[in-house]
Length: 458
Image (cartoon, rainbow, N blue to C red; front, side):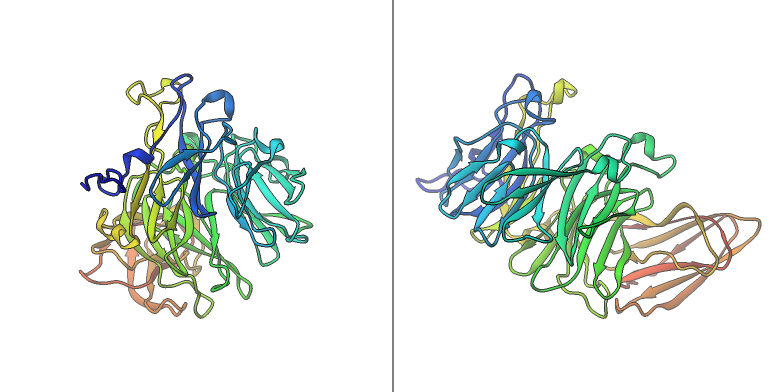
């Protein structure tokens, strides 16, 4: 514990209690910190209630100065916001329904206050004068960065055929396309593995659905790498879809270190963001991963797990030489948890390298969960590097034995080598030798059948 001084507030394990934010007691809702951004000599952030203004109060737009003094801005409004982007041409920060210039002057987009804003991204045809903004209920807006005039372009519930409860979480614009994701995934979806989740893209003319499962966040390393990343999950594992202009979309799979963040409501908010300089950090399915900004041989490699955790991290960023993580710690929504008390959330301050002192990387998942596979068709690549002990479980529903080639890509460049062939007649287990690792592992079946293949890493 660091004791307070005339210039330094009390700090406990990276947490500064005086920077915590609280929401009103009535109605008791939520006060998660949805978005962080260093801007105009301060750290700006917005907090959110559970579902628009009538569900809570006391949230708003906040700033921290260099002395960690917390100020609630008078332009604050109550709502649900997690969007943030710096608009280059106008030198303005878009965060929540607010627009902030480099002097720290705030304007509010009144037409967006009552929408649950989850992402703002660059415009495809008029990037100097407009941006796109996504709402959690699938509203897709165009905003004039000067006049703040708002035009709704699409209702994505109709465009993407989302029939269940929507939970759109992110949008990004790059390589002549806007990509959006919806993370709808609920208890009833598990038995079939199907959900109203979506990964979709728009080229300015036509929308195309890329995947019908839960997707949570999008990211890119603009300026250093060409890859566009989309992160989600299904029953089998966490998902990493990667777009490169020369390859189109490719699918990779990652371990989960928790199932407590599968449900749409508990995935607030996986993020991909630059920390330090040109260094990407990914938070997904309860694991922090180091994500390479660059791709090599048109492939992703160099991704590795840092640590496992149970913290709900609304956003994170670098500020004043620190890694700052937003939180959502106490959420007594309508007293569904009568032991939660007053809604509150805090910030964590540390260094990026501190993440290695969190929980040891562990996880489970694999390429298949009761899936029908075709003979000779390889599974998606599944991450193998960065974990200690590794065990593969295979089950089949087939008339007889099925052979599976266990292949590894130890260089990460897409060159696969056979490690072992397993003959499976109902069930088989493979324990890898201690220290065995590769960037990616995949399976190739000899016959078409229904398969579950899950790897457990400890």
